[in-house]
Length: 252
Image (cartoon, one colour):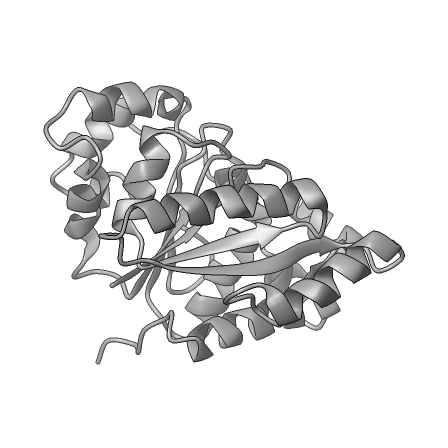
């Protein structure tokens, strides 16, 4: 099982919409896929029309031995959801109270190893003990970047952390998100980054009203608008991630 985190310190960069649509693309390709909505706000859970609630909250979740008790099926074949819970806002405190506080999530995710090919983590916009657990758990970290100076600054903060922790084995892949091609600054920063930013993916996700409509339809774009530009872009992005060696072959 490969663990793929969609993460940025900065909020409002399209993390949840990206995570939901990539999970849809992965499931559509035949991979048994699980998405864990780690954000207490529960955006990904909302998109899948699943109540953001886990019995027993954070403590109950981490102590669960039977994963079927916490995982929820979605309406999409091959795609399950581990919902958000409002108690996740205090997950740092729970992790800090245990042995090896930076590695508790990695141990917990091991319980899903035999049931899924790919596990997506939709991460909250913060840098915290939860984030450090994500860094230690993920095989791949996708970082959506709006092509602005401040967004690039947060990316450099992420890369500084990775460089300072040489034992981390995750691969970091940035990509441009919510791109407005009418803005000269967006185009200049994106074009420069495509040639100078290490590991940047070629597929950029534009700012599209159709992606915003996910909240109305409570579904991935590929489900309610399968022939749209947005659906095709997320499929292309997922294909590029596979080519970068980030995904896995389906279990036989």
